[in-house]
Image 1 (cartoon, one colour):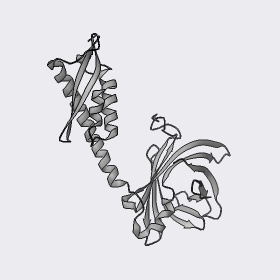
Image 2 (spheres, helix red, strand yellow; image 1 turned 90 degrees about the horizontal axis):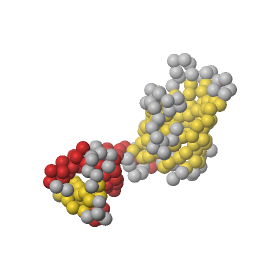
Image 3 (tube, helix red, strand yellow; image 1 turned 90 degrees about the vertical axis):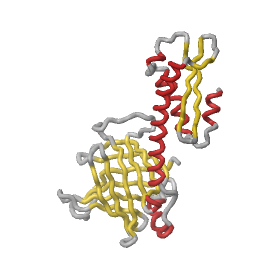
Image 4 (cartoon, rainbow, N blue to C red; image 1 turned 180 degrees about the vertical axis):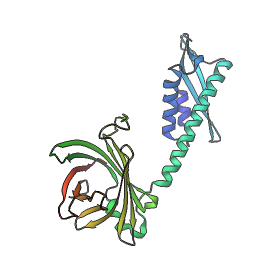
Length: 275
């Protein structure tokens, strides 16, 4: 249709904005009757929308209505103005939100490691990408609980750090999990390399549970070991990457109550790269 071609001719318009503007506005806002003037017009239906851009700054909608015979005419001014203003406000708000998000992401995300310490940075840089895990948690009473995790690693801060997301249950379906839902993890880790000590300062936080874990990470032989400080309860925790391959690794959560003499496995994740 003509209005789709007009949208596609906007070279500076983010494709996601096009999709949101075209389908979210027309389907969810107009057809659901949010604009009161569109209600009760049995002889008219939403059929056309034109998107015009002025100086690459503003998007303006001119909505058209088709009558039952299929003839397409612009709506009378009183209707076009009301609907047009409503559409303009929606799209401009959408553009502003997209611009702010894009600006933040472009300032945070990096394309690769900083050149000064490229080899050392690849300790965690090797994991950049998306992973899925099958996980088993082992309780003190011997019971086991299984789960699936969505894990994503990315270069950040001009390639001087690696940030990741650890998510369970996966949100791939777009579903939302309640803040206090049992087992809910929507967490992130920031790993910053420190060349002065040849180690990584690591902070992991999970807002749903209010958990914050601080660790120091290093390569030890063929493994990566992240060690936490001794807790107030006299417990040591370490997270260990083992069996590291290009497309797979196994992650262990281990706990010690005898200052590291022995370790109990509390959790195992078997990860596979998905892209």
